[in-house]
Image 1 (cartoon, rainbow, N blue to C red):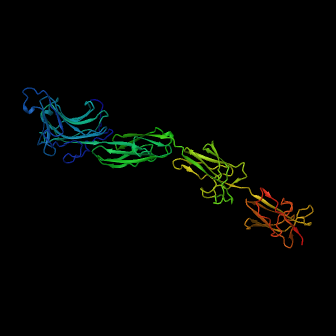
Image 2 (spheres, rainbow, N blue to C red; image 1 turned 45 degrees about the vertical axis):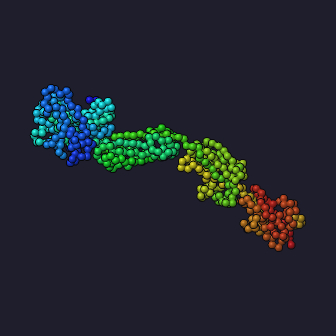
Image 3 (spheres, helix red, strand yellow; image 1 turned 90 degrees about the vertical axis):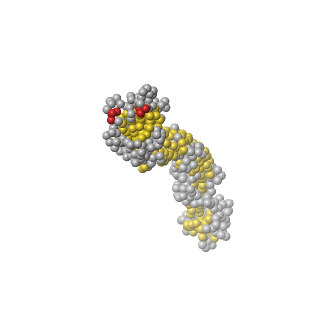
Length: 534
């Protein structure tokens, strides 16, 4: 006999000599026609008679497979073989074959007392496993050891479990004898086995199979199907694949002939996972474990990601993009990777917009360069990320952002800029000669109230001139302003005698205010007023 495995008590699978419960009618097993009630010779059996039959052999000892009544375990029949003395005749019945399954046979057998007293007698039943060449690769048999004369019935035999060899592709029950008779009934074959099938989902087609192609950064979806190929219910079926992020829940019970499917995922596959072979191991009690494999191909993610947004003039300096605040064109924007390496540079368009396109999945950072522009950065992260500024005022760079399957586009990387402020002022003097020009001997007038207004004449603030006649309004945002002077009983001298160059009076005598105008940067000290004593 070639390679095969019989599992003895205490081995990898428990012996079932005491454990197998045979139902009435010998049902529940894998043997066809188990109680040989069908046909005579019994249906499903093939007979290999001894030949040639010696001349003079009595007809009662001619090779024959038949059924009779009297000694049966159940039903109304048992099977028996007659054969010439010392010539072996054998009956076979093909059983269900499951690769790698554990087979446990129970039958009821008997013979004549005279045969048991012969040391060289052949009388046996059992299982034979065959390969593709129809050669026996494993035989599990027991000698028929019960004389029916003792009690008028057949006796039970329990065989040790055996594992179907890897080289086998079929299995048969057999009964053999070289003398009249070998008898049997109630052939009960228990099969303990399951098969495992692992599959991975191909996201492009949605199909499940042994292989799949996935994009880096996506999730690999797996499913495992366990089929009970045996005749008994399996319990506590464990499915284990180390590649699963979370192991599937064990299958509590799986009836004979049924299948159950469990699933798991492996999130965020990387290019390093390309060619990964995932092996699932399925186990149930002490049955031999089964494995199944799947393979994934991981492709680089497509360069379809985008990063960008907006650079704007934060006029009100609140750190948020307000509807009336304009974009700032011509700002240099550099894209960097996670290591800080520059990958490319753009400049904002006429509306202050910029966008880096056709990017691969990864971690990026955006840096703004305003060194050549008269701006400073507004406050960072002042509120809604879609409306605030992301540039760090100290570095001009945003925090890193990750684009990939979960976020293909990030258009929130904005930079708010503050335009430079201005100082406005600055002198009220007593124009003694009434020429509208500031003479060297003409002194400043203290304690004159000066009011600052915007272009709509809305009051913004006020101050009074100092002892030297000087005043100023600082940190003014871009825009048009006018200054109004409260001169009391005095009058204002004529306006614009030197064309408003800072040496004359800028206040209109009729209104007491300078014309609305934008102050120069960083200061406008031409908003002067000359006074005339009454």
